[in-house]
Image (cartoon, rainbow, N blue to C red; front, side):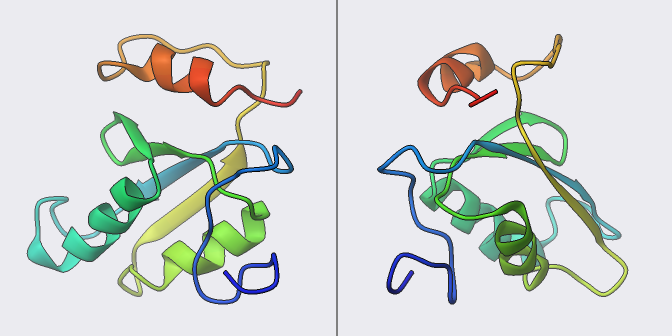
Length: 110
């Protein structure tokens, strides 16, 4: 991140300027395939939380479009990715451990 905007990779939200995002992947290969390791390492490096199979929560100081474009580069041509803002208007259950704690620590804006 250079000059406060995303030029190559997202930065951590420090000033509260952007909401947390939901990243949903549809991967053509098995999620455990070695070619996806850089993707998952990068998500973890940015403090992302896996809440369902191929679904992550991440809180970075970028727009949804910037986050999408950044993570798209880790994917194969036929993989799919959706990035959406996490809002208070959500409902979840049967998710992975510590999802409530992650959302509490990274609350939605609206």
